[in-house]
Structure formats: C-alpha cells, structure tokens
Amino acid sequence: MTTRRDFLTSTAAAAAALSVLPGGAQGETPVASPALPVAPGAELAPRPVVISSGNGIRGVKVAYDQIVRGTDTLDAIIAGINIQELDPDDQSVGLGGFPNADGVVQLDASCMHGPTKRAGAVGCLEDIATPSLVAKAVMDYTDHIMLVGAGAKRFALDMGFRSQPLLTEKTRQDWLRWKARLNPNDFWLDHDDDVKIKFSTGTINMNAVNAKGEISSCTSTSGMAWKIPGRLGDSPIVGAGQYCDNEVGAAGSTGRGEANIKVCGGFLTVEHMRQGMAPAQAVLKTLERLVAMTESRLLRPDGRPNFDIQFYAVAKDGRYAAGSLYEGADFAVCDEKGPRLETCVFLYPRGR
Ligand code: GLY
Image (cartoon, rainbow, N blue to C red; front, side, top):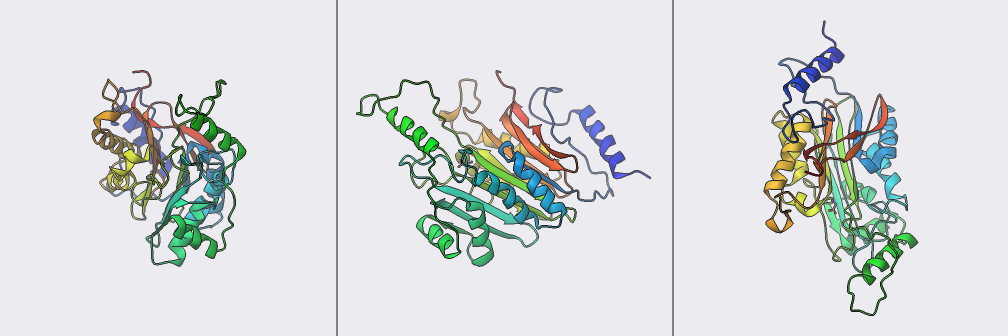
C-alpha cells in the first residue's frame, strides 16, 4: 500500500525532474512546495500548516500550536498576527507602524473564515493597535464586511477595543526625517546623518489549514509609509490582500498594494488552485498577470517592475508556497516540523 508520505516523496521527485514550474531559469528556481500532481483517485488528507510573510515567524508557531490544540483557524492566525501588531519594533503593522504623510498611523486589515464563508475588513483605522481583531469583529457582529475611517474607530471603541497612540518615538523620528528631506528649499533642516529613510510597504499575511481541511486567511498592515492620508492598499480588500475558499485554499499578499488590487491577487491565486495548479504554480501565474498589468511608468529599462510583491498560498490538503517577483524573499511556515523560514519561488533572478 502506498502511504501518503511515499506518494508525496515520489510526486515531489517527479515534479522536480520535470521542472514544470515557470519563472526563473530551469534548475535555478527555489521551489518552496513542489508542484504535486494529484493522482486520479488519490485522497490527500489535510495536514495542519500555517504560512505567513517572513515577519510572521513567531506568529506561525503560536497559530500552529493553537490549531493542533483545536482552536479555530481564524482565531489562531489572528493570535499570530497580534504578535506583530503589538510589537512596537515592527514598523509595518499596528503599534509602531509607519504613519501617513501627516504623521498619523492609519491601519488596514481583512480576514476570511472558510468554514462559515464570512469576511470582515477595516481601513484607515486610527488609534487601535489590532485591526485584524477589529476586522474579525466586523465579521462576527455586523451584516457589513468593511468599515473605514472614523466609523471603523467608533465601532472598535463600541466593541471595547482600547484607544492608544500608535506613533512610537522611533517611527516619529523617521517621519520627521522623511518630512525634512522632502524639499531642499523649505525651512526644515535636513539631517546630515546617513540614516536610511525606508519607503516600505510592510504587511503581515497569514493563512492556515487544520486537519479537518478548515481554512482561514488574514492580512494586516500600516500600509505604504508616508502615504497620502486616506489611502487604502490591498490589505483590507477581500480578494486582493487575502482570500479564502474552504473548498480550495487561501492566499494573501504583501508588497505594493496598488499592483495587487488591479489583479485581485488573493482571489486569482485561489482560482488558479481551483483550476488544479499547485500553490507554487498558482502564485507564479498571479505574478505573471501582475507584471502584464503593470503600467509603463513603473517598469525599469529592462521591462521588469521597479517594485516587489509577494503572494502566499496554502491548499486545502496542506500544500503551500510563496512567490515573489524578485529572488531573495522568504516566508514563514509552521507544521509538524516546527517554525522556519523557506524561500519564495520567483519570476526574476536578482541582478539580472
Ligand atoms: N500591501 C500593503 C499595502 O500596500 O498597503
């Protein structure tokens, strides 16, 4: 009798030998989760796994441990995401996240719960450190899916969330330096230190499946640093920043949200898996579509995008992968082998 482990080993070897994945030169592409063709009639039992953007390396373990103890997959991944949201040193989400051009931290998040087919989202939320939990509260307690701005904050306060300043001293200093350097002819003195002012689009996306094949996804962010006040990225948009279909799998994204919104990348990646693609193929196919939809002002002389973006995907049976436009990104995984960083598949090798 062929065990599941035998099946995975043999199909992984077959997929590797075939080099079926697009993107990168053949034999160079690091494949996080090999393309596993599902043999006709083969039944792959779901296996619990949590995947996340690399900054979720602590959170995937917390989420995985909760899932194997029986916690709902969405509650578990939000517990994992809360670690980054409440960490003042993570300048991509929650407390300490980069502010907008006015120095105000505005947070976005969305989530989906596969078993009940529900979703929730918040955008431009101020003074509440855990937008992932507020998004879930929108899902749990209202007939709406998305609340934004002052209404989202009022809702959060009504639900008992604590209002607190989110701009840390370090992040305020970074914002002041960015502001001072905006215009060499204004009355702000530029610092002559060599502190690099980041222009990041940091975010955390986390997706999980449990042993029953129940799937959830969640994404949380402070958005693009120094954004125009009121800007929403992809993270709060169900179908872009994350998407989950309990029959198929879940997917989410970090990186330039404006690029993702145009391809509805979370939804598109899940649809690719629905059509039979393995997670690695699905994320690469989404990246290809995103490149095709990139306007010319954002293309380098070699025709490639001048930004990066990542997609993360988990299938109902526990296969997973993450893909990045450019080589070098990694992502966090936790399963029965414990938490670790793995390498994203990619479209373009670095430096070429
Ligand atoms: N992907 C996060 C953002 O663009 O806001």
